[in-house]
Amino acid sequence: MDLYSVIIRPIVTEKSTTAKDEANKYIFEVDRRATKVDIRHAVEKMFRVKVAEVHTINISGKRKRMGRIFGKRQDWKKAIVTLAPGTSIDIFEGV
Image (cartoon, rainbow, N blue to C red; front, side):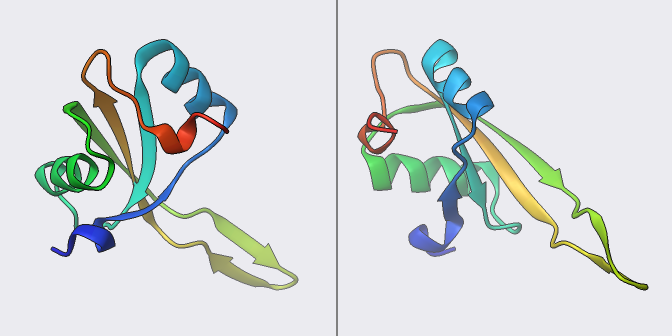
């Protein structure tokens, strides 16, 4: 899998900011076909950090209603990446 197609975007919410500050965990939306090993290699190469753990969650899209018609949001995959102690990703520091 291509290195830059594994990580789609970072998830920046209050909960992810708290996880970053307290436990050195960063949350990303990743490709649904990506494995934990793919995610680990992508984060280590892109941000030049050492990854300690990777947890993944498959999130099913919510059902939404638009008038009489029901639709469904897209399913996606979330990765929670724990970095080794003493390392951080600089792109999140100004957020």
